Amino acid sequence: MKKWIRNGTIVTASDTYQADVLIDGEKVVAIGTDLQATDAEVIDATGYYVLPGGIDPHTHLDMPFGGTVTSDNFFTGTKAAAFGGTTSIIDFCLTSKGESLHSAIATWHEKARGKAVIDYGFHLMVSDANDHVLEELESVVNNEGITSLKVFMAYKNVLMADDETLFKTLIRARELGALVQVHAENGDVIDYLTRKALAQGNTDPIYHAYTRPPEAEGEATGRAIALTALADAQLYVVHVSCADAVRRIAEAREKGWNVYGETCPQYLVLDITALEKPDFQGAKYVWSPPLREKWNQDVLWSALKNGILQTVGSDHCAFNFSGQKELGRGDFTKIPNGGPIIEDRMTILFSEGVRKGKISLNQFVDITSTKVAKLFGMFPQKGTIAVGSDADIVLFDPTAERTISVETHHMNVDYNPFEGMQVCGDVISVLSRGSFVVRDKQFVGHAGAGRFVKRSTFARP
Ligand code: URP
Ligand code: ZN
Ligand code: ZN
Ligand code: ZN
Image (cartoon, rainbow, N blue to C red; front, top):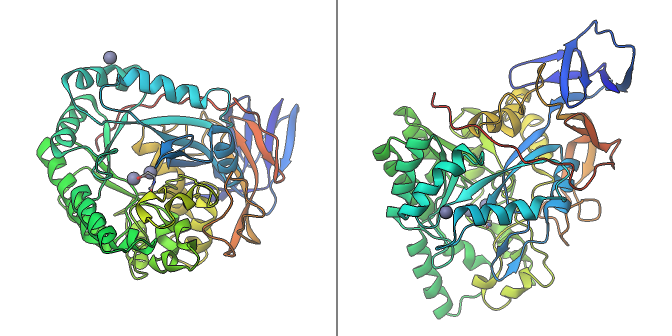
C-alpha cells in the first residue's frame, strides 16, 4: 500500500515548504500540494517537520576495542539511531596487519547481517599499505561499494599507522576516487605524555585529556592536510574537537584543497571539566580526541555555520560504566575510549544549534544528512526528500520538550553523557525505505531489515 504523508512541512538542505509526500514501496514517487491517491494510507504530519532521515557518518558497533567490545551491536545501535531520527549509518570496518581486506569486510558484514534495522555502509580502515593491500583496494572501492578509507594517526601500537602508510593510502585513493579519513592526533607524542603521566602517579580520568593536548590534534591535522596536498588527494578529518584543528582545515579550504571536516555533538556541548567528575565518573567522558576547554565550542559552531566543517557524526562507541569504563580505575589508559551518542546526535544539533540560532534549519538538514550523502557517495538515493529517492523520512516535532536520560534512551549502555539536558524537538515517526521503523515513538522495525548500501566514489568538485 502507498503512504501519503499529509499536512507537514518538508525541510531539505535548501528549502522549507508545505507539501505532501507520496511513497510507493521504498521510494518517494510524488511531492506536491494537490496529490491524488486513492489507495494510500494517510499519515498526518500536521505540526511536524518532514525531514530526510539522518545519516550518521561515524559509528562503531560491535567493535573490539580497549580490551573489551562496544556494548551496542548492529541491532541495539541501529534501533537507538532510528529513535534519534537516523536512517543510515556508516560504520568503521577495522582491519589488522596481515589480514586481507576482503576477510575483514566479510567479518563486518557478518556483524550487521540479520541485525541492522536501518541501512548501513562501511568505511574501511587501512592499517598497512603494502602492495597486496593497495592492489586489493581497487575491488574494495569498485566492487564492494566501500569508497572511504580510514587511517588512524593515534593509538600507538594498536590502530596507529605511520606517515608512509597514510601517504601511500592517499596516493592510491587519488587513483581510485576514495575519500581518505583520518583520526588526527599525534600518537607518538600522546604515547610519551601518557607514559610520563603514569610514571608520576597521575592515573585519574582527567589525565586522558591532559595527555592528549589540542596541539597534538592540530599538528596531526596539519600533517594529514600537507600529505593530502602532496598526493593531490581528498581528505575528511573525523571528530574535530578544537580550534587548532579547525584553523588548519580552514586554511586548506581557502587554498581550494579537497579537505573536509566533521565534528560531534559531544564537542559542541560538553567540555573538559566533565572528566574531573568525582568517584571516577569522569571515565564516562573518556574518548579521543578528549573534550576541550569550553571556548572551543564557539569555534566549532561557527565552523559549521560557515561551512569550514561540513558534518556532525556521533562517533558512537558505547561502553558501560559498570564493568567496562571501570577497567580503568587506577589507570586512565585502561578506560575504553568512546561514548554513547548515536541516539541524541540529531536532537542536540536541532535544540542547541537551530533553536539557539547558531545554524539554520536547512543547515541542520545539510549537516546531519545531505552533506554526508554527498561526500560519501549516497546522494540522491539518500540525504534528501525528492522523487526517486529512498523514502527515508523522519516526522519531527520541533516544539516538544524533553530531558535526555538513561532512563528513556534506547542505547544498550548504562549511562548517558548528556543526562539531564533539556532539549527541544523530538522524533515522532521514522520510515526507512518506506517502512516504519518507529511509529508514534514506538519501535516497529525488524532486525535484518536494514540493507548494506554500496556507495559511489568521491565526486571531486
Ligand atoms: O574514543 C573514541 N573516539 N573511540 C572510537 C574510536 C575513534 O577514535 O574514533
Ligand atoms: Zn586479498
Ligand atoms: Zn577516532
Ligand atoms: Zn570513531
